[in-house]
Image (cartoon, rainbow, N blue to C red; front, side, top):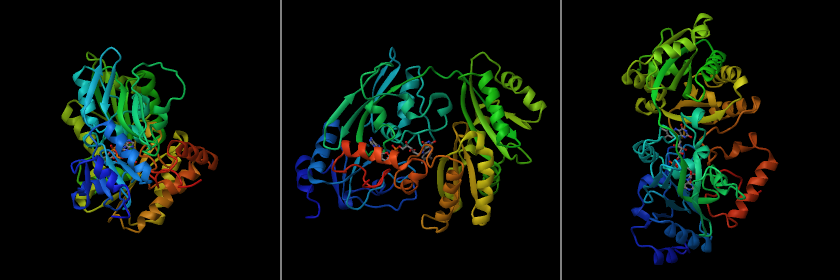
Length: 465
Ligand SMILES: Cc1cc2nc3c(=O)[nH]c(=O)nc-3n(C[C@H](O)[C@H](O)[C@H](O)COP(=O)(O)OP(=O)(O)OC[C@H]3O[C@@H](n4cnc5c(N)ncnc54)[C@H](O)[C@@H]3O)c2cc1C
């Protein structure tokens, strides 16, 4: 193992429970949820404390050993997938909610805690965690902050970083930064926790997070709306924002090809026949005593009369709401039907979304007539997912799907990543959303924090600028 100079020091510092080598590295740590090919890292570190993270990084730093950081491995940009010469450092043993402070309405947890555990601890204390996404059972709160995750509730609570009050993180050389701030106001110099949020492991290893919690949700009203086009969805969103200020929990949009594929491939029954051009799935947080149905329908009365909305299904039971959500979440079902999904996560300006998605569908049909492409997402946040149903990671048509999608991003001045981050996958496209000057400034920050470039190299930014 002469090509692994850090090994002797790591073995002196850690036993075999914490430092895994060769066949003792589980395959689970070889890959995340992206289409990146799996790769066994040089070693796997499973620290149990911030002190152990610090010691491990100090050793790797001293030897110039590169490190890939792993949370729940649900990432979709390939950022946590190891290279063969990298040491994987997983936060999976650093798990647990340490405190819920009812007065500060804050929660502090170890970075490896699954998001669902954080949500449950908040609910048990009579409060609500503003971060929520489909991978909640597996993703870690540290990973959520590292990727500045989005999800279904961004319209109400903002992205992950909007819920962040404080952080503990370990720098590349092992230095521990601890700012587990619980105060809403703390204007004391650089807000480095916000800098680390969304840096995807390229600046520091997050070991603890302190989140701001929210008032509990009262009564959720769920409604599906059939719409003639995306502009009708925007008009509906505007009306709901006026009638229910701060109460929209989510506003998800699905375009027609998404729904026909869910019906024809997954076998789901759709709420509308004929299939509308656009469907919105809306959740509102209504007072306990309100009649959810009457309130929503009254607010939308004119839009029904003007046929801006052509039909609606109001969920009258949790089972009905779950059925509507089953359609929205159906993208995860395609694997069972023989497909591997290439999911691209982009933003487009809302005022150009209608035209951009219509052009995207037309360009995809022209370039790849045999590939089903479905478009859906958190459209009220400008965020859509463009998902192509391919045969596998090596399907050559994936490159063309990316080309067509990023061409639309460039033409309509969108963003190459709305919420999944840049990771390995989107690095070649970063320049479409960030100028050369911005990329240089980001690289400068990265070099200041990690001069030897050992943390997550090859992710987010070009290696040398
Ligand atoms: C079914 C499904 C649904 C999803 N839905 C959404 C969604 O709606 N919105 C959304 O934004 N994402 C979504 N994702 C993507 C993914 O869940 C998020 O990116 C999540 O935040 C990743 O967290 P993780 O703990 O799994 O991180 P990982 O996949 O382990 O890592 C992701 C990146 O963060 C870095 N990282 C992880 N932990 C740390 C840490 N402690 N310190 C520093 N860096 C770290 C890694 O190096 C890597 O670059 C979804 C994924 C799946 C599989």
